[in-house]
Length: 81
Length: 258
Image (cartoon, rainbow over all chains, first blue to last red; front, side):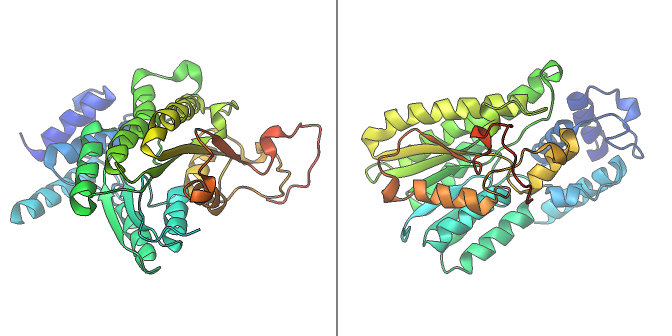
């Protein structure tokens, strides 16, 4: 499963939203996720990939595409280390 | 009041009230472990500001709502320092909802971080205080007994924290550990701005007989006192820091200074 697919799975599990709605262009607001959904998603993604996503970084994400790209970058970085 | 040679853990110590407490204890000579969960930059900045005061600072990331992470954090402290003198249970989170909108997820999240974590941290801290005694101070809120809009889950969690404080105070007294709590009214922090956005009109804040709103430093001063030997005979209490607002009848009229 790709990073994108794994993140989509996590978001769907936490927010109970159909995966088809979680496109790269979609935002948390679009799928009506509240602040708790968002923080739990970040924590679950951090644990799934063994990375840290500080709120300072998460606040810069415009949509899920940005979120996925950030995680992909961190995973590559981690593998290099 | 000196905390020279003491080691203090401040959960949620990177920002707001936790940061003010960490800096206050550090200014009196304590080395500080700054725990954070979501805001690394803020925690690192607080640690840097603590080091500038001439004491040691360590940053540890842990979601205190997760028992495994609490264990990891205390394992790290145990391995690195082998002791702990002061625990400040400050980390808090919450979901702003009215009672009819509360679901299990929001309840568990808030209770795990605001109440259960205080127990788990106190249990682990007490072991690191073995043979030397210590101080535990937890951060409650006036919302534990006053009903604030959308504050239900947090209010309940703070009520649990205050009751836990009484049990800990008595059961840990033979170990030489003093346990207390503080409860502030609205404190000028980033979290307060978030609360206004979510559910409260700022103009609804009652006026304060003391003439201004509570600051993080006001809270830190009381916490530091409770961590001192001067407060040795205070046990299991929740000290209210609100400039008199909670006991003041609305029949009184005060000039609004804030």
